[in-house]
Image (cartoon, rainbow, N blue to C red; front, side, top):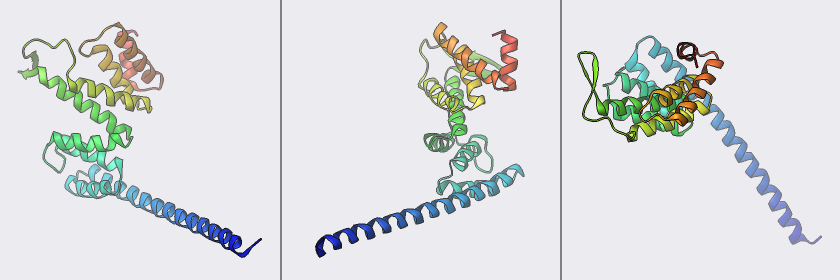
Length: 209
């Protein structure tokens, strides 16, 4: 074996060694960051539970910049409900979407739920505690209805019981329900009930599904 070949083999071995070493260091750093982010989220949730909303929002913000989808979802909750910040639906949608697109099922459910509320408000108005329609009821669902179903379904498919219950309600009682969508909704509702989700159990019993 000539010297040139030996040098090439040695160079390859050294290159592989350093590549593996760098990869190990990157994994270690990601693990450390993940642990720190989880700790930040836990601290923020403690502040939120104690109704120290402004403190919680600040920590959620920082944890969100570190990639915590749980923190981004909670920022959506804060902006939707005015916890430590003004009620701003646009920002609630923004943070829910960021977390939902990263696969967070709670955010997917919240995003679907908020889109449903917004869609519903497009053609209904609350007068004296009674909902009345503004103009003719649309025969086709609004864009928000479609988005509500999209995100709720993604959460339901990940095993979220509240999303499965939500899918059941949306598909069985939503706008433009037909026999096919009703049947799909019934399956989701029964799935949530079978898993022990109390609202779904009560719904199934009440409707005799």
